[in-house]
Image (cartoon, rainbow, N blue to C red; front, top):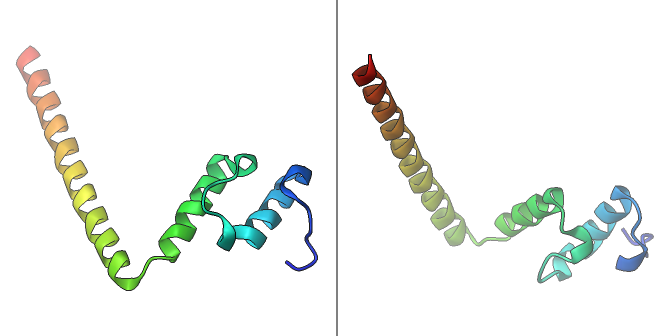
Length: 90
């Protein structure tokens, strides 16, 4: 992106914002207010994950598996309780 030279205050379009994001991604320590939109927040999260060491990545993935497992157990328990309550009412 050597030819893209707009400053943060000059960004007008989504294209400008994406070019700015890509050019300056490595230097950001937080999300600039001009890029504080859901799509850029997701992009920052993806970039943060891509920047993890292999050990950090393994821990993150294990944590994600545990979270999904617990969420699934909770959803199943809630479903079963709803079915149980519905059966008691009929």
